Image 1 (cartoon, rainbow, N blue to C red):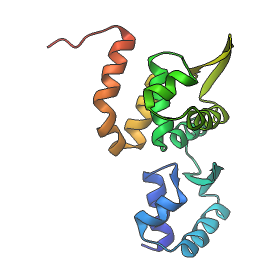
Image 2: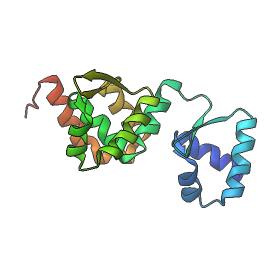
Image 3: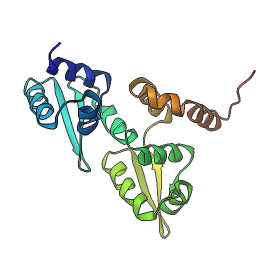
Image 4: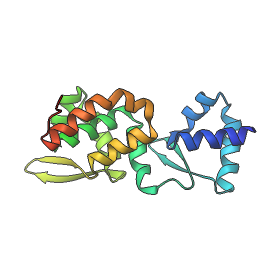
Length: 172
């Protein structure tokens, strides 16, 4: 298998992988990887999206509607924010307190999530209240399908959250 075929195969298995992570995981030099990605993009086999100083790489046929979600869940803070908003809508202060981060940090991530089209914002008095735009079940499916390692870590938390949202209980 050629380097380029190996890179393409890895992108198919890990859609939305960042450029740096791809280089690290495949052990390929930056310049070499840039060359192969350029060729793959020219051959119309991959697409890349730049956001927040990072380059995210997807197979050409990847479902466009899931690209923003994969970009967001690849960032731990944004993933945590999405999961918090799946519980209920919150303002920036509440999110900052729950995640034990500064409001400035939360503001940055909320702007990214807004730019990705994953959250809604509405003014409520002096506060801006954020809510999730996408369905939690879609988040669960995307994580389990495209990020199995992450899924293993989050499975119990997500199952509990879904049960809470559905008002159900597990019957033994």
